[in-house]
Image (cartoon, rainbow, N blue to C red; front, side):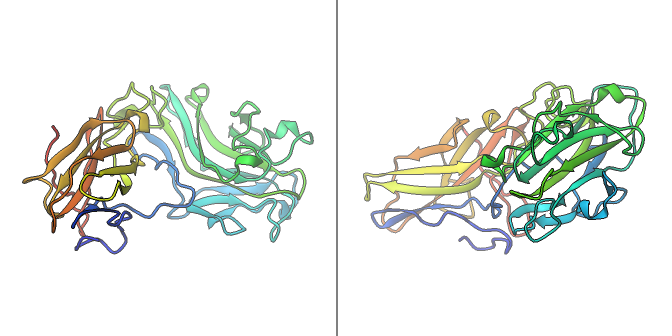
Length: 352
């Protein structure tokens, strides 16, 4: 690990490639990865009509049982499921089928009222995850289980228009625990005051647990349907790109065959912010000095991608060490190779 690394950050790839008496070392600093990583939501935009991540609470949000039985409403803020699965952030959670919790669930979660302007398009965007049987909308009871609605209500939740058209909001049980991001066009409600509704009906008290939602946003002017309004989208007509890319993640090295004739292989994960993986390109930069990726550094790869791999056939001389950093780029521009202990972006040479 290079000196001056922020305590909350780690270099996840150690010196994996040993070449003669020299070493290759991955120096991208990256955050710990949540067990169920999902693409980060874009930052709040001035044109967002609703933006809620629940990290600071849930002001104005309410919940209630649908059938009138209080024990059928378990909505609460949590960062884990009732059985300890790490959700990676604070979410609004319903533990309907939890073996140690509420049992049967039939409830609804409502956002604060939002006044929609007259101009379209307006979209609802949110993340969801569940550990249950992945049923469709509530209209399908009792023929399926663990049913979910995403809807819009005009009367405080008395009834609502189902947006997911009776298809599952979250994957079936075989893929439970997989995060999904949903986006729905709600332009039909322009000029009205609405509330977002998430409804959950487990139908029974068996099999699975936990339905959770997060990063709930109502976005104005999202012409390319990437979840970002045109005012904050650097490519407002390209649904694969919306911001500068973040840092490349989880850089790892391997070297084979052992010795000076071997090849160092690099592998990393795409940034979690800025756009889709298929819209990313990468520069791979090598240096003999972990504190300097400008003077004397070498571009091992320039504008490569969208695959997240590279190879370096050169070997350091005995007593030298190779350090690597990866920089992502997309149509919005170049990202950064990393930051110092004060979160100041570090410079690196341009490629080519």
